[in-house]
Amino acid sequence: MADTSQSTDTAWEYAPAPESREIVRIAAEYGLFVDGEFAPAADGRTFATLNPASEEPLAQVAAAGPADVDRAVRAARAAFDGAWGRMPGRERAKYLYRIARILQERAREFAVLESLDNGKPIRESRDVDIPLAAAHFFYHAGWADKLEYAGFGPAPRPLGVAGQVIPWNFPLLMAAWKLAPALCAGNTCVLKPAETTPLSALLLAEVCQQADLPPGVVNILTGAGGTGAALVAHPGVDKIAFTGSTEVGKEIRAAIAGAGKKLTLELGGKAANVVFDDAPLDQAVEGIVNGIFFNQGHVCCAGSRLLVQEPVAEMVIDRLKQRITTLRLGDPLDKNTDIGAINSRQQLDKIRALSETGEAEGAGRWSPPCELPQRGYWFPPTVFTGVSQSHRIAREEIFGPVLAVLTFRTPHEAVTKANNTPYGLSAGVWTEKGSRILWMAQHLRAGVVWANTYNRFDPASPFGGYRESGFGREGGRHGLEAYLDG
Ligand code: NDP
Image (cartoon, rainbow, N blue to C red; front, side):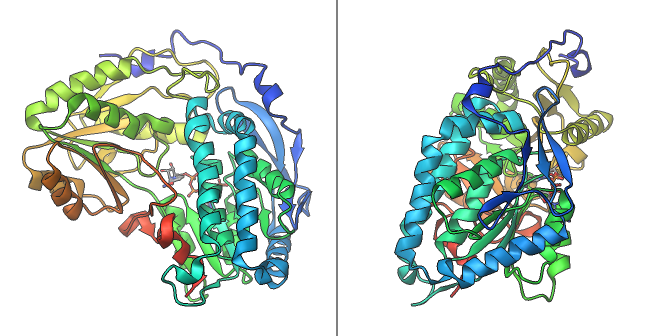
């Protein structure tokens, strides 16, 4: 059993490959994107965005204050009252389609930038984040001229100005999830990316310019939580869409209560990935690994609780450990890397603190022998066994590469344990029996249930949770509803 506290002993220094700078040009400073143009913040404030794999600053980025929020909301309103608001759906579709095509053309640039700013492995930004972001724009381009036939009434209308606040785990993809349906439905947008990952949203702003999107239709305000709070509170915003922590989601809900703004919240999760004894075990092990180590576990729907049926528990845990030992942690820009950097010092501290409580509460901690780079934010893949439902690591969202393993005997016990959480975002079921999949899907209180797979996303498939995981759906026909006044 490897002791993770020793894994830094043989540390090595990470330095991004020089070619990455040739694929994407990163400016020294970035302004806010308001009314079709980049401009500094009104009060001139900026902040640095870092490469989490090396802690080196990548760029200085404008920090939007209340005056900038006001300017962006006014620009969005003017665009809504002007050309964009009057434009027929078939014309809006062309812009969405153009953005999708440009994202595809510039996919390499986006993938490298995303991995530099976020720390995620290039294999994931290249094969998941960027293609899915383009797919969201393509999908919604297809809907834009068909909204009257989508079941929202004969003449569904857009809501107006959408204020959108997104997290750092899938920066470009979350921007696409927010912007594509809003624009498809005819709204205009003010988007606030997360403080630690602003760069791909700013490159997307360049794409909007390249696609000749009318000024003010998309505005991008970089900044910290205060910028998000000012956007949420602005009286000129008609709809708020938020993805992030349950804590901030609750604050937002309280802040806009009674203001008549529409709201969708996509918040945290503590998903159960349930493995029955008749499951194809090799496939299940791959699904468990993908469920918790994809994107360093910075995934709201991560399968962070493994529930495994007792007769196969030992075998599954053994095979899982063997498989985890083959994972490669390190340079996010290396195509062979499986686990990249943790996005920020703050998130690393949180993962460390919660993992320590796991040990203190008596669970068995295991990580493979794993060299961590000396600089940057890193955490080894970690498995806790002997976890009980009362442990904090089984209840709280860790948002890192940390798996808590629990066991069960019967399907009823699996459901009871899986549902024993205030969250309700996602779940996974591994079994050969179709009837059991359907029974589980019916009884699991989760917005998404994957069967014999995990972490599959498609723009046509609605995604979202309930209870403390939020409300409203993103993607598919259901996702459009949140941006239409039917
Ligand atoms: P937050 O919920 O704080 O951040 C999400 C977004 O909201 C960011 O753009 C953030 O800005 C902004 N924001 C922060 N405070 C406010 C506010 N009062 N009003 C409006 N917007 C605000 O998540 P964190 O990044 O701080 O992560 C904390 C924890 O949240 C993680 O450890 C994880 O457990 C969970 N999380 C869950 C996510 C999910 O998808 N379910 C995504 C991200 C985090 P800024 O970046 O400047 O803070």
